[in-house]
Amino acid sequence: MKRLFILIPLLMFVASCTHIKMIDPKPQEIGKAYQVNPTKQWNGLNKSSFQTVAEQWTKDGPLLNGMNFWHDISKDDALYEERGVEYPKFREDMRATEVMEFFVSSGTKSGAVNIEASNLRPAKFGNAEGFRFEYTYATGDGLKMRGMVLAAVIDQKLQMISYWATDAHYYEKNAKEAEKIFETIELTSS
Image 1 (cartoon, rainbow, N blue to C red):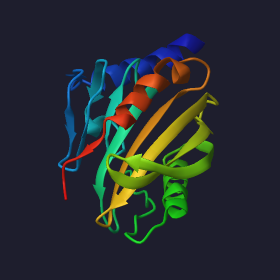
Image 2: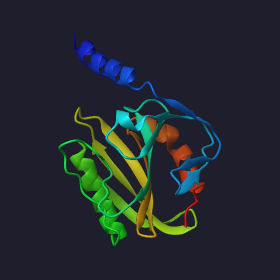
Image 3: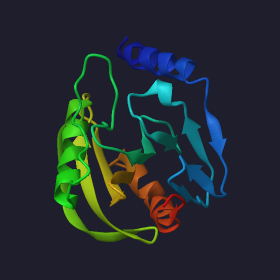
């Protein structure tokens, strides 16, 4: 009976994801802000299936791992949208520490449990000065998750990529591919 309770939500999720597209290993435009060049195939998910305003990809299924690609987050924009929920809003004068706090607060509001971010440091986002950090959290069911973020505020707009996966197996399985994607960022807007 317990398996039925796990299987039913999963089947409902799969049925709602009729708009999955293949992300081929070639340059992929993220909005009009930047492009990335994956070296392996991913599955692109329909935005309406999730609360995020980002483009989302997964390798092994959205409950196991994925990448979120946010672009052109402007003043008063949120990282997530959900009817009746007030998410934190972006400010164009945010520093790296504040963006990290914005990410954590947004994740907490979206249901991540005990989310913690660490190891904030400078990093290139394409040819722009940016920053990166790691984070951990648990799902509502207690599954331990791990992730990394690469971001930059460019022309007062937030550009950000997050890779996340289950800590037990899937994080290490695709972390190198995520790092390669981080390295291929090319800014396309000015």
